[in-house]
Length: 182
Ligand code: FES
Image 1 (cartoon, rainbow, N blue to C red):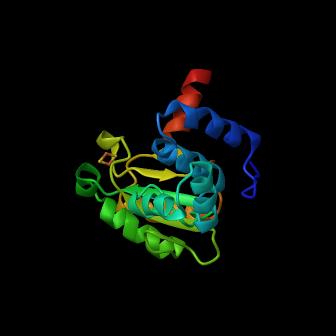
Image 2: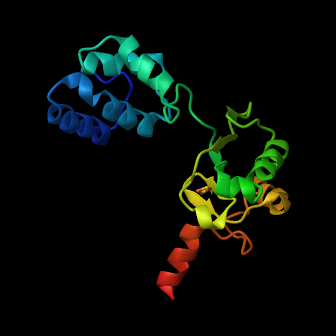
């Protein structure tokens, strides 16, 4: 099959592997969409068409899935993607103020990508670290206790590209790595 989406060999072979595992090709649709989104950052109309072709479906069958599930996207997020937990334990500890502060500092409304494509902000359900809220994830790194009072400083460090060096806001993942190295 031709490769107009320029997907990597790795993604193409994962798709080739996953499709025959389902009794009907159409049942693999969500898996294939995820694989495409993982590589391209989003599933636009062109990608819907390619996936539909691959699974002997109509593009609308794919598009309806992409537009239905909140974790699927037609347009990619920004180069830095910031997620803030909105679920009750984090909300009670101030995540609404955190999100508001990020909107102001980063210059982007939640659910959107900043015009220059640099930042996007998502205010979303549980990020699976409920005891240490408000929880913020920047790309793949998790930060705990980022309440409204600390959010401004957090955003400043992020904007200056200094978040990774900061002792005050060490990510859960970096702290774990440090521990295993000690
Ligand atoms: S409630 Fe915020 S991480 Fe679970």
